[in-house]
Image 1 (cartoon, rainbow, N blue to C red):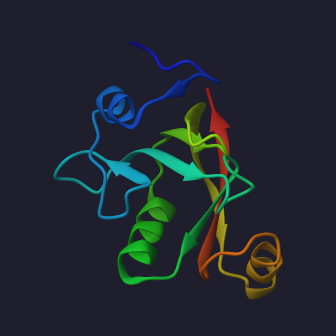
Image 2 (cartoon, rainbow, N blue to C red):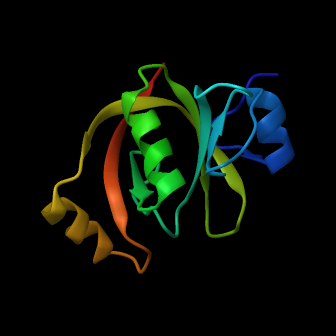
Length: 127
């Protein structure tokens, strides 16, 4: 069944529709046994510029998966967890470019209380 932009999906539906597993970084879903990211579900409270930016946190697994997404050229399905705690489908996206510029990171950290940001991934929607 095709995903519908603007529609909300339960977590199990997202995993089934994208043929993905979650973890070790739960918001970057990947194909079992691979590093291919098939979907992302970004929390708007921690990433208020989603779906056009992903703010990768600082931590061993988180920064590793941020680097995997940074290197990936294949598009992936993007969901945004809104303030009502529902995951809304926003379309297919791919990384446009990334930055670890400390000034850009500081501007984002001033927007929302959250942990450190390792890298900003700028995304673009694809058809």
